[in-house]
Length: 223
Image (cartoon, rainbow, N blue to C red; front, side):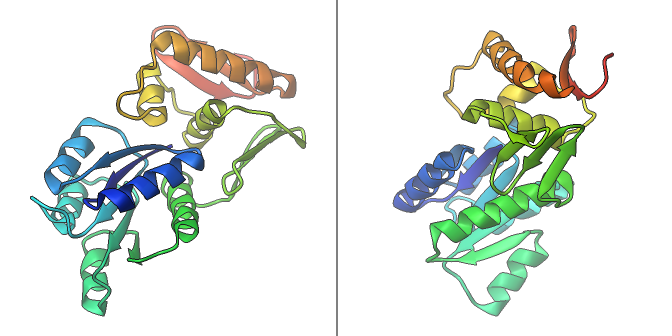
């Protein structure tokens, strides 16, 4: 899961990105509203954490432009403005949640989990695919009831496949949702990650099928 943090306070942004990365998310950071617009145009994110008081272009302008493009990406607003009218303006502009500063990082991470879960899969805390279950809150996968030992990268891949069940996913799409700016992840590396995850899922009858020239798809029956 990939998150964009748009926050001009460097100390706060550093704390946010560190905490979210420790929770297993890929995180990119921008400091201005103009940079946020550019990042959203050029990259695929699963969640936007947006400060309203951004320089060069306000967070509300960024949010309105995002919704004007019919994007349903979940948006969590962070702001020092905590009046009722401020909250109403943010929510009316299309925000999904709102947190006034200061806030507890543990609560923010919990809200991030809820928003990404709601945004990609309609809200169920546990995703199921044949003998495979995945707890989106605890980020724990089980196969035939037994916990799977997965690396952080494998957990990220599994989330992408399950939350986009039935869809073909190209290597470029996997990279865009798994990796932050500056990470050097080649198509060959994606093949390695998929191969490792595939080996762990196949004993339970869950397969990642390769469709030559197109990408990968998660299935439960031989094809």
